[in-house]
Amino acid sequence: MTIIDGKMLAEKMQADLKLKVARLQSQGIVPGLLVILVGEDNASQIYVRNKARVADKIGIRSETLRLAENVSEQELLNVIEKYNKDDNWHGILVQLPLPNHINEGRILHAIDPKKDVDGFHSYNMGRLMAGNPAMVPSTPAGIVEMLRAYNVELSGKRAVVVGRSNIVGKPMAMMLLAENATVTIAHSKTENLATLTKEADVLVVAIGRANFVTADFIKSGAVVIDVGMNRDENGKLCGDVKFDEVSEVASLITPVPGGVGPMTITMLMEQTVEACMKSIN
Ligand code: GUN
Image 1 (cartoon, rainbow, N blue to C red):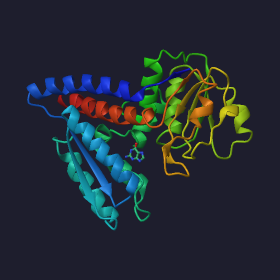
Image 2 (image 1 turned 90 degrees about the horizontal axis):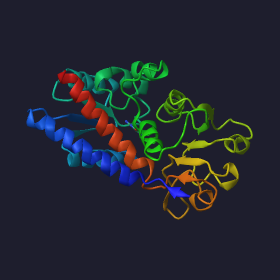
Image 3 (image 1 turned 30 degrees about the vertical axis):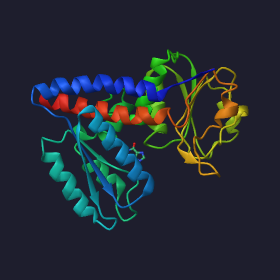
Image 4 (image 1 turned 90 degrees about the vertical axis):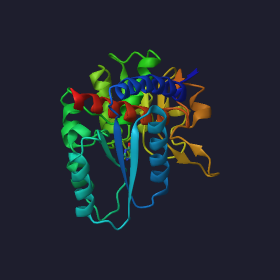
């Protein structure tokens, strides 16, 4: 069994990105990432801080705009419109979840698709679905990079994605399909889940339930990707996959932390740099 070192891979990609950004800077161009955070959600604060830290490390100019929990939808739309028009910002990201009084779809659709570094706008989701991707969600994009880096064969293989969110499950399935895997999407209503996941050569789990996937879900030699980021009963950070026992059965597995998480942020940075380069061409 091999542990997929997402942290190391992310650091290598960040070093490459840093060189790319330095080249842009020598031409007087600085990629800019604007992050909008509404309210005080604890997890979101940590995510946003990590994004700013990595942007800084790479040389991307980033700013986090913090808006009050009770900001109106119209005020938020006005902010997005302002930054859509500002050429100094190449990527705009609204951290999710948003407070209940704000319509998430309306906000995500207000972001200029060219600046939509999260790939959540329907235009970008549609392009991914059509097999002609532009901006794509960072988490599944990072997973494809990891699978590539570890030479995981996808063509003709059975891939099972557990979770059907717009952020991970659905785009993940489309990306695996584009790699010619035979893809099944499972979710909370799926019957006989373990029977299904046991058929997977590649299993991606994104359900947000601590240590839910146990060894009896896994085909011997499968590749297991854990997108979960949970706290167990002792408050310790853990994934959706029970690492100790699943790692006994899998051939390759991602740890939590140090697996998917660092790759997600790195792909976000890569897309910001891409958006910047496209804007000057
Ligand atoms: N909330 C949880 N994951 C994400 C993400 O990838 N992007 C944004 N904007 N919000 C999130």
